[in-house]
Image (cartoon, rainbow, N blue to C red; front, top):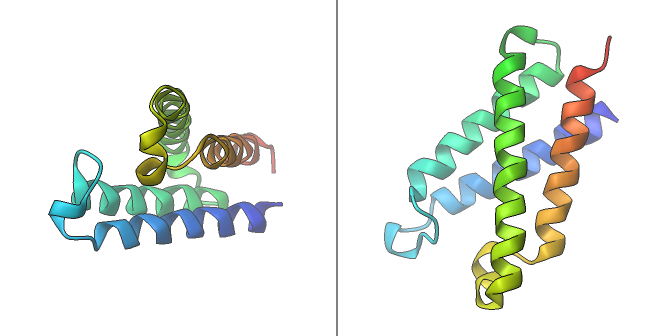
Length: 112
């Protein structure tokens, strides 16, 4: 299970790195390239925790809860304004990531 979760986080990191490469005028979200690069770095922090580096476990938990909240926010937003689906993803996309981040939380809180 842990390796599957790590692969999902690596995929999420790749998505953010690709978004970071977009020209600023094509950036949809506030913070643009800088934000996406920062999130990619944060994914590495969580991957490192999953691989046994427990020094950043508190920070990892904070990041995961923040990402869950962010995806919950986007579910509400795209339900109210379907035109955002093209830029931000549909409800299923956000539910997928919420479930992934909840699985990560369970994994990092598991006693080894």
